[in-house]
Length: 378
Image (cartoon, rainbow, N blue to C red; front, top):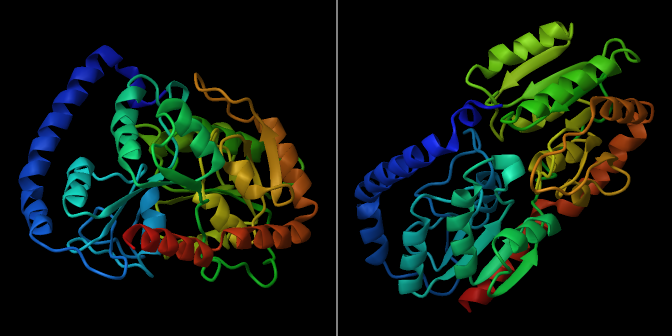
């Protein structure tokens, strides 16, 4: 249970509405100058000029989350144009607080609006208040001239909770830069090392990973685990994680790296041999693509959009039902069995994972976006 879940929704709801009102008022005051500058600037003619809803894209050396990662990648070829844009491209997992105003300004100037749809909020994952998260995103999806769904699962979830889009759409899986995420030529001489990637904002994800390592070490005695990202599942996430590690007798077998930048991500991946992805119903996890591109096969919950990425040979999935009312974390015993199976054929699986990642290379993804934007601005 997170800190948020300990407070009843009847208390949290009015607090949240008040907070949103205060934040919104402050945002309006700060952003008014930006909105006025956009309204006073003519959109660029000819080539597509794309705004990602921010004044400046974060650099590769900055810590970014969610949709900002792929927008950061796209902006290398299609740079952010915060003023003279003729395409506004926003994402559900990186939606700016002033998204509605930006869409309104785009409409006033005749710019196209494209929406990138990740997952949705639902009771099993988010808990009470999931409707408040979905409402503004559903509104924007129905405003879009074109919707890019990150996976077939994202389309399924969006249709159920938002309704089908009003205009054109397509499924375009997240990308990976296969020139940056590359494997070692030969596997280093080290103990079997698992990676729990991303940020740890759900307790069960790290609990299952630690329990899995404990079982694996019964067969592979020197196996290790790297836990990346912020331990955000509790107010004292690091303290609680440390207590879990001690309880399982894993003190010398777990490395907590903390948050990392995209610049640091490839070297982090190369420290591991296998990705342990315990998240249930993950819509389209880029961490899985980055791991496969670096030669890491994947043990994962066969739910959400992850099976679409891994395919049949690049890892082993643990079956799970589709449920919107509660999450179904994979069992540690099944995860451990899959890890041991992959470890027995690691060299061959490394090559398969790398080849699978090529299907999601960023080059094709960027060119498809260029074609979408050019068609909309023609």
